[in-house]
Amino acid sequence: MQSAKTKIQNDKEKFKREFIARLIALTVRVLRFAPELRKDKSLWAVADQLIRCTGSIGANVVEAKGSASTRDYTHFFEIALKSANETKYWLVVVREYSVGLREEANSILDEVDQIGKILGSSVLTLKGKR
Image 1 (cartoon, rainbow, N blue to C red):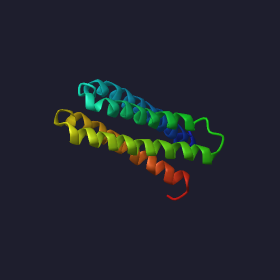
Image 2: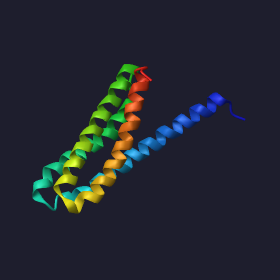
Image 3: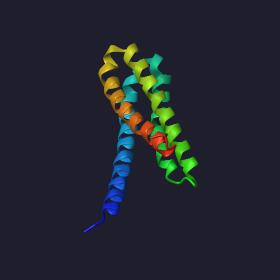
Image 4: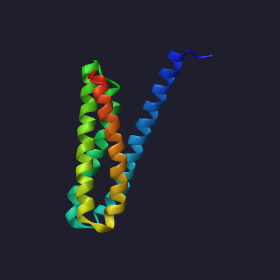
């Protein structure tokens, strides 16, 4: 039988694995959405930027795992949060620009918003403000 401390550690590890899988799924989803954006030449640059900032969310969370200090770890999470905020901005732009892309943009936006809340909460916890 596992101790309460071991169970908490296992739950944390499971959450981290699931969160990273969720970030990968988000990036793949945006990569699949990008060709739809590129059907309108004026959205080509937006598609590229959306791919970069969405990918940056997951990349920085994964990069944090190799951090040498808590400060460094926190910094990577702060960058991931900034990338999530940028992703939300570009999705709102797409949503407002194109009625045909609105449904998928809103759906992705909802996922990014949830991820942003997790990242924001993590940053507050890491900084001891929670």
